[in-house]
Image 1 (tube, rainbow, N blue to C red):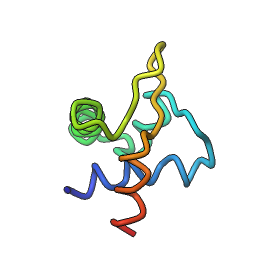
Image 2: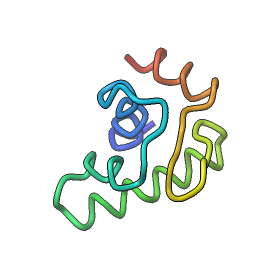
Image 3: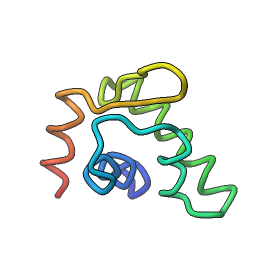
Amino acid sequence: MNEITKRVLRSFASWNKEKLDLHELFEVGGNDPEQRTAVFDAVEKLVQDGLLNEEGNDFYSLTEKGKQAVMSNE
C-alpha cells in the first residue's frame, strides 16, 4: 500500500469523522495538483478493493475491511 493510500485511510481518524467528502480527502495531497490526482486515484482504488464505501454526493466511509487495514498499517 503506497503512502497516499495510507494517508487517505488515516484521514478518517485525523478528522475524527465516520464520513469524509472528497474535498477533505484531497487535503492529503495538499495544493499539488498531481498529488490531488493521486488521492482521487487512491480513493477510486480503495472503493474497488472494498476498503471505502461511496456514500453519495462525494462522501466516503471506511468499510470494516478498511478499518482493519488502518489498524494493520499503523
